[in-house]
Length: 95
Image (cartoon, rainbow, N blue to C red):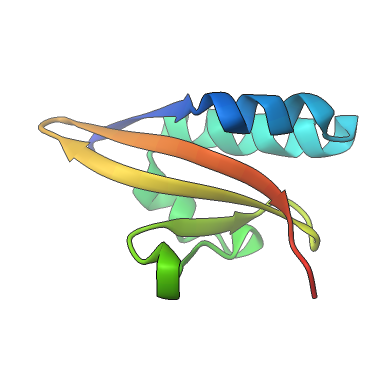
């Protein structure tokens, strides 16, 4: 059985989320709910989220696409039988 996952949101990310368009907030909530229900490891492999590890200054962090332009940046920590997914920021991705 997969480990249970919980999603925590930093104060910085909470502030960013409050300013997002409604449809982006909804995408975030769907992703967070899926992580808590299915586990981060199962959600990670879903092709629509394009979950990927980051590089450079962000080694150890991961990115998930909410839309083509918006990303969730998170870190994952294993705490025994629980995986904590800490959302660090929700950002508009520059192309």
